[in-house]
Image (tube, rainbow, N blue to C red; front, top):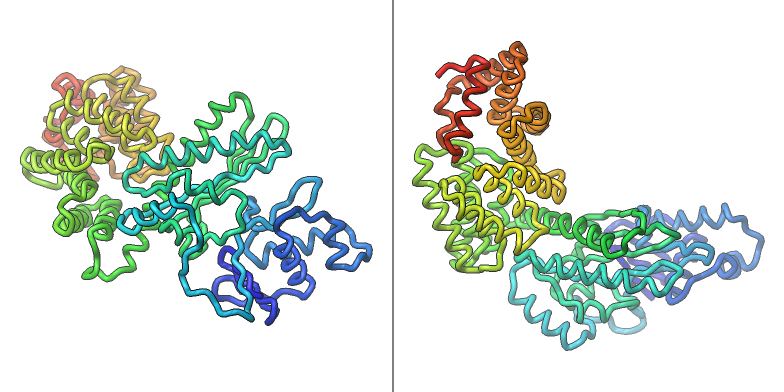
Length: 526
């Protein structure tokens, strides 16, 4: 008999355990213990059960048993805190919980990649998935590890909310609840189940309640390799169960979509450039865009344009082309900012016409309209992006920019905070800190402006705008020596720095004048 689970294979005839392509060296007793756990995976095995089966009833200390369980976990790669293969059931025993596919070696092997039996809904989802080039994800019902069976409503509600939240990301194909919940309690291999649904990613998790605390473990699995893309654990006080459910949903949803996009970009980079389809060209464009360099941004636009040529109705390729063109203007990488923004606006409008439920088209339009000094249109588009997908951090950043340039400073600060909370490690975080620094500066809250500007500079040393706000804020506080030093550093980084450097920014006259007056106080010459 051969048992396959996660990325492992246990061969009972050859007495071999493989993890991936590597043969694992395991002691006979450890092998027997693993096999016994797998064969009895439908129920919890107590300490006495294991001692009777493996040690034939001999006296065994708790330490020896724990040591052998640890050796089994190490051999199968279940060394994290999630216990996704062998789970310790407090005061009860142990249970093998990973999905298992077994094959009797005395019978003909099943065809490679064969489908498992699924519901009619699953078949419908599969047909849809085969025609869709978006990465697909299936959210399985979360395991309720609490001793209170009634807590299952919480774990089910959490999975439901995650399905709904992930469905807002138009770049993901999310399998419906009716299909994924048919796998509750089933011992099915993740890879087989993923192939049945036509998805590459599976999200699974568990909920454990103890007293007034609750622990939620979540893991995103790449079903093609069996590897973990993302793993997280949340420990919370159980105060308001619905607020907690909303909080965990927001945290997980905001982390999953970027994790999948990262994995998809790496997958696309392994393809030869001359064999790329529209979606892979789009992913390569995203990879180039993240470098935030002039040449890479131009390369990103070439990939987005290629995706549009292959698929003229690819809304997100239009949206990201528009966004990348705005980045050119933001960094002053193009000589004719007005014409470039007008062209970017055309692609942004096309994106929303192709798919008026996709938040990225409105994110791009919100920023572009703001930079075109069409502030009301910018606010409207950015708010539409937030309404469509409040879990996308860039929706909030777009709204923050629109509010900032509309002199709605408190709202801008709040929107930037929302965006950074959803994506605390975002590579564009420096710009959010810079936006908040300007808002605080315009509110005459100079100490807070200095703090935010310094955080922006820590993230991106050469961010001239943040340095300008820092310099002006120091001058306003009559910290003349510090202001002069900061101005000298700006000139060192950008020798041609002058009033004209702010020409591309869509500020109203009073905002520009307030900042320039501060810079003049620090010694900037017109």
